[in-house]
Length: 519
Image (cartoon, rainbow, N blue to C red; front, side):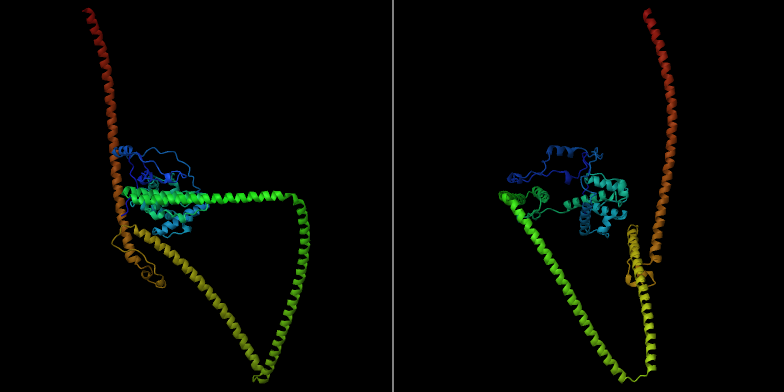
């Protein structure tokens, strides 16, 4: 199984060892900072072996150290763009890491308390498989685990209770994103191939260069430290050379960009000097430009007028041509229709009464067809509404089945198969066993009743134990009261004896002094 990454609280430190330990530099003759002097060193100091040995020899302490003052979160957690970026990263990680519950961008934009509990449980169980076993309150356990893995900002338990509200969700989303990035950094092993080759080391701005440089350095640092622990000097040197080559390639790109900007500035300066030398003829040229502009505007107006006139004539020609074609077509149609009617009249065998009767029958059939069409549209609308209602009911049933399966999974029943499987093909069956795949009355209800009886027994036993403890507390309080009374009596007796002793001692001292004077 997965090992727990929660650190032990030893020596007053609550920071995870894999996050707080400064890596020792790899054994190599040439360091990246020496070969690329233009860059600042981002490595940590070598840990002091003597202080580390003392911390290991000391007895383990479970008392947490004093907490520093809470610092403000510098991340723009209220920015919508930042929130969308966090939601995209978190959604991608949950999908690729095998998150067992349904999740989408809409879910992460306004999650319910159950959604948040499922997500944070999934992430923290990748750190500690024993997370949320029911021994602590969920809010206390989440806050404790975030503090244990080194989250630098406080998490309010009140915010955990109302996780999906607009004023608490941005901070919790940032915390989940931080935990996700921590998991990515611990789950992915840095390899030599993670350092981008010099030909691919491109960037668009100084911010991109800084982010790419930091990422490449930490990838190198993790790989080099792993090689150092394994005693693999060859891999360490290869990683070091790759990092130096990437830095030198970035420096060359920056130098080329500086040269290009310098040349461009020189061209601009030469152009400005040339324009300044031509400024003497500027008034006459501006006057000519104004004259040319006025003439050009007049020509444009004339051309525009001619174009408008031409367009108007073209429209009239097109309109008249279309009317002529329409009249010709209509005339041809009417001529052919007249000839057709004449031929039909000459060749028909029906009387006037037959024609009237056929027209009446035609009107009746047309009305019947219209009624049938209206009835069909009504049935189609009812069918569509029924399909929508059925779809809605099936969606609600799927949610109910999912909630039922989630709750059944938490019941202490191991030998019965109570999980429901919704079969949409059997939706018209009256037997619910064919639709749900399980007998609710014959299998589910007896099992749930058995769990209820078991929980009732546990509750009664707990109440009896609680009552016995209360009786013991009452008897203990009575004994304490009696002991206090006895103590008060003894103190009063002691006071009297002390007073008597003091008085008698004073008298004896006086008598002794008298005898001593007599002697």
